[in-house]
Amino acid sequence: MNEIRIHPRTGAEAIAAKGWLSAHKWLLLRRLSQFGILALFLLGPVAGIWIVKGNLNFSYTLGVLPLTDLFVGAQTLATGHLPQKLGLTGLAIVFVAYLLVGGRTYCAWVCPINPVTDAASWLRARLGIEGGAHLSNRTRYWILGMTLMVSALTGMVAWELINPISMLHRGLIFGIGSAWMIVLTVFLFDLFVMNRGWCGHLCPAGAAYSLLGHTSLLRIKAYKREACNDCMDCFRVCPEPKVIRPALKGADMGIGPVILSEQCTNCGRCIDVCSKDVFVFGSRFHNPAAPSPGI
Image 1 (cartoon, rainbow, N blue to C red):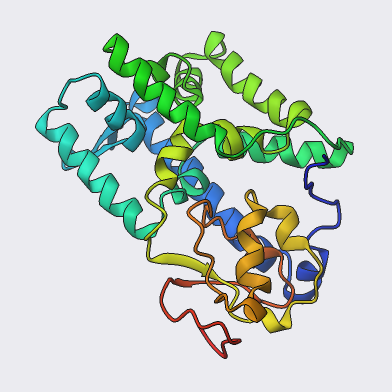
Image 2: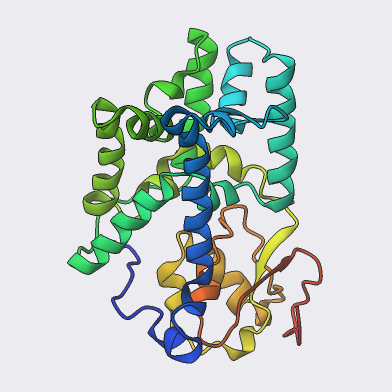
């Protein structure tokens, strides 16, 4: 079965209608967020400016704000070890934050592997690579469960042995080495084996964060879905295109315009590439089935 892929002209109508910058606004903001966060972590070991200490597993900002990765925290608890007070505080902050904004917002706005998989998807489209392996997106939840089980049985945070996020951090600091092989493997897998396969079907960290997405307040809304011209550009750029259809095409079935799926990453690309401005950021509230005149 062929995977959805980005056509070379995807977003052309949006660029013509609202200009290149507006048609890439959320993509550019995401890259600024991702690379800005990486830069804050690298300032310490590279330049001796310690604004943020640690890494994405656990960080301490300005000696005030602790943040603990949700997936790492879950593995630590599975080992039977209780994190120290600072680690628990950081875990609680992250839990509440992503409960509000949507768990997989982490995948689109924070995770440094996202630009790697986006690059693979972009190159795959430009090379015209079609088809590929098929895996259920539930696979990542099985991997999540198995990782927690291995952590419980071994007493160690098992995923850190092969975590591409940690590997990328170490590679940036210490240079090219074995750590880069994991990142390269993810890139090649998405390029040649399965389009958006890593983030969409395998990554247990994304699976863990998605569990917080069921009740999150921040949502993308197809609030002008009656203006849709069926260009399909939003489906082509969305890393989880199945989340769009209910909100975009569900009016006749009594489904409101808010994208409620926990798999939505709030990346904003559907907003960028829509020439009709169908999509906006909003909240989960005011979700009538009839076309909405406003946000």
